[in-house]
Image: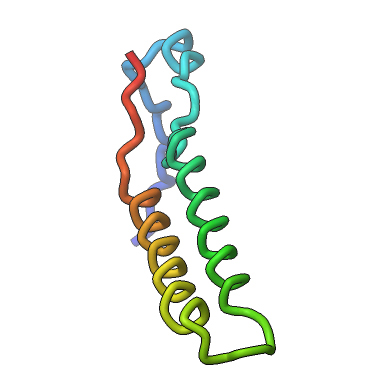
Length: 91
């Protein structure tokens, strides 16, 4: 049995007009301006906590073993807040 030659496929018809394909919405960023601001603040707080923790004299000072770790953890908390905060909707 000989096979019949296949017919060429018909062009696909779309319902969208060429004008509607050209109109695209602007890119939406995951984070808003305020989220980035909070993230930069949190990085600064963490860096300040590590600066408080540094040094070679008096390694058992109250600042190095109590205050600096609390400052670092607060910076990480601000970082989580910056990531999880929903950006404000533009009207």
